[in-house]
Length: 199
Image (cartoon, rainbow, N blue to C red; front, side, top):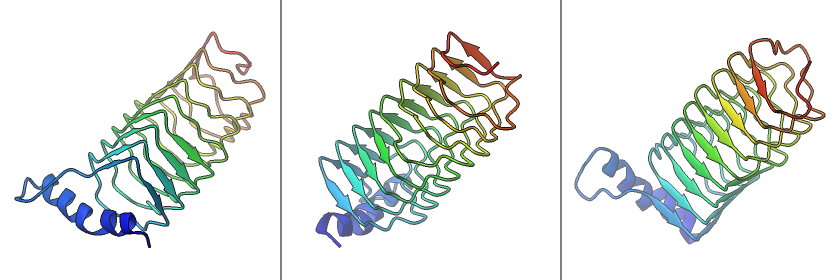
C-alpha cells in the first residue's frame, strides 16, 4: 500500500469525517495531482470530498458515500464502485475506464465531458441527473433507472438499454446509432434532434 493510499484511508479520512461533523481538527478531503493504487475505501463516508487531476487505479469504492463529490479531470481505472452513492456529485472531464459501477446512485448528479469506456452501468439510478457531452459508447445500462435524467450531446453509440427505465428521460442532440433497446419501453422518453433514435 502506497504512502498516499495509507494517508487517504487513515488520517485524511478521519479528518474528513470530523469536518463533516464540524468537529475540531476537521479538514475536507482534497486530493490533487496524485496517483493512488489499490486503495480500499469500502463503505467510507467521503461526502463532499474533492478529487482533482488524480488517478485512482484499481481502488475499491464499493458502497462508499460520495454524495456531493467534486471531481475534475480524474481517471478511475478498473475501480470497484458497486452501489456507491454519487448523488449530487459534480463530475467534470473524468474517465471511468473498465470500472465495475453496477448500482451506482447518480441521482441529481451533474456530469460533463469525460468517458466510461468498458464500464458497466447496469442497475444505476439517474433521476434528475444532468449528463452533457459524455462519451458513453457501448455502455451497458441494463435495468438502469434513467427516468427524469437529461442526456445532452452525449455519444451513446452502441449503448445497451436491455431493458432500462427511460420514462421521462430526455435525450437531446445525442448520437444513439447502433444502440440496442431490447424490451425497453421508449414511449415515455423524449428524443430531440438525436441520430439513431428508436422508432
